[in-house]
Length: 313
Length: 313
Image (cartoon, rainbow over the protein chains, first blue to last red):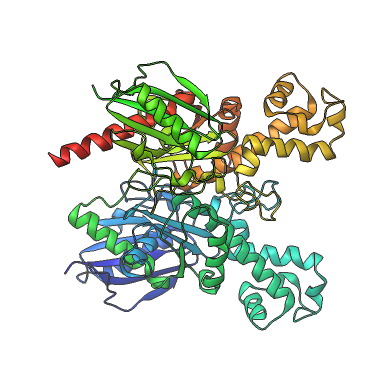
């Protein structure tokens, strides 16, 4: 049985575990804060690899940022990662062969092989968190694009008038509305114009102190303002999915990430199916949750490193 | 040399020609108005087929509407086509084998094989006309989706607030802004609020009489109002393309259709490349123009029908 030391490296957290060729996690799942400099991060990865020496055959990485077509390094600048991250030489982390994939792509592959999208052929996996990521599987193959950067679904435009600036400095990206960051902006904007804001649980709150978790709890408890923000946010989530479903005509959309867990999938599915011109689609929550990236990276590494099978479009 | 009687059937016009297996048009190109009833349309197709009997081996159709995965019939309702069009039995038009493909997909294939996208692997072809169609080629293959309906790019959402109703009865589809119909709506909306409307060539015009052709000419002649409408429209065109490029990371975007011809491709390319997070993309006008659908349908039919025969031997 081939085993992988599989990492999931995000802007805030870094997790790793030993994953076997069937996608089974066969160690504890370790979590750390992502170091603030690329030197510390590199050192940490080497240290973890050394500590686990002998327990794995290959090393796989699910990482923030776009990955090159050879699956060896990060090609894009990644605003949430330490400076210089795109130059990190993953091949020097271990003497074993390594395999690198974008985290949203790896998570999509994990959900396709072992999670909520098992058995489907045309799949969109959306990761809703601080930002929005996407992994797209077309007829059982991962969409990579001309240079490995495809699937940047967070940058779909959902407004005509340059209303919201995104962290990428462009305007009206889907991510500026439908991510956690987007929900916070919706709180800020609606608080200014809705009298309901000062009539419920936020009567004495400072807008900038309201977190997304807090907002979601208040909505669940029936606060009018929080309910409106939540519904507006979920409508924003729907808009990008409607576009993607019209473009790809997939069987299933899987929602992962922290913000994905709070979506009312049944209600969202209804709104989406009411607004598309292709055949109806299923919308379901992710099953592997935070492990999807590690599992997917290991499974992709297995197919690429062992079988040399081309599972990319 | 295998020959095809190849049709391109749109909401307003119907064209046909004899196309050979290399994509060469080897007859005159005939154009007719699309009949208003499905009975008249069926009769016309049969008549044309009979008149050309002996000059072709197969019949290929590029048609408005989504086509099933077997390439035999139209699966979707098509608002611009005669009522009952989705039930039209193409196989009864001729004794020869037939092949049906969505017009935007066929046009994309034509541009990929014989036109502006020759030599590229990841291609988006946008048809800008009365509506918007799209054909997407990923690593040399046509994107079809779970049921043949993929590529409905006209239904990308580009506004959050239900501002414009589309002919599909949903709101804020890209098509409601960036098609010819969309430009007319922009004329109507801007005429209400811009004093420049009554200061130039339209000082005595009725808004509803201004055609897109007329508007484009006035913009080219420097009318302030017409220039603003045109630039707004071109920005609307850019928005959908930005989303698609971020999703697919293609090498090239080809603009076809009547409204595609009037786009300032250089300016559009600049706006798009300034607003994407993937690598830069080329944006070019179509080369085959109105013939792309006929040529693409014939070439797709050749690959599908001929290979089928080989399989049976």
